[in-house]
Length: 301
Image (cartoon, rainbow, N blue to C red; front, top):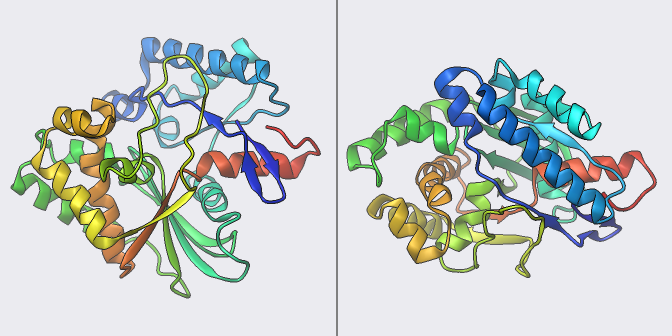
């Protein structure tokens, strides 16, 4: 939830719930009755809270897990019954473009080249553009949880499993398009936004129980060197998710995903020959908010 103004977004509030949709779909091909019910109830609750807090427009989108789930459309039916709101299951291209818009708006000047990478649990979106205008990109079957599942990784991953993961990541990233002009590399998604937490720079945003919460006071975009990303990878390679969670304040579930996600980010630094990475919480959610604001006169979404 956010208010959109001429200089960016403010009064930003959101919630984090790691439901494991992607892992369930990867294992069975669908969400199943229990997860359908739980997800519909959670979405209904958060929509109710957003309305109570004054939201004037609401946008609901689904990503990789729902694109792949045999019963993804059924979740949309359940949500519509509860809330009267339409769930839009995004194509990979639409997800990528919205992530680019959210990651670059109010950050990259018009005409300046940029690449936005959105690393999720099951997919990674890569988009090149100029300013906040996306030019081209793709959605790759590569994500923090997908890497861990593909390598049957221990906790923490063994050296052999890590090498296996790096090879798989490199092979998938060969499909990622080259930009016409090299520019800033911006990473969004759960792994990217929690890298500063892993490095002890920020306090973690807590996994939510039942509430929309105000975002922390840190800067929207933070630049990290490649060495910093490698330190984060080393931490997840030598400590279990429980140890990482204890050291950083991340939830054990998030700490576990970081072990795969940080390797994806290192692979992207290699793919685009970048020495630094700009990480941000601004991404798909912000792209949806900005699109809603552009379509209608109300300033709050």
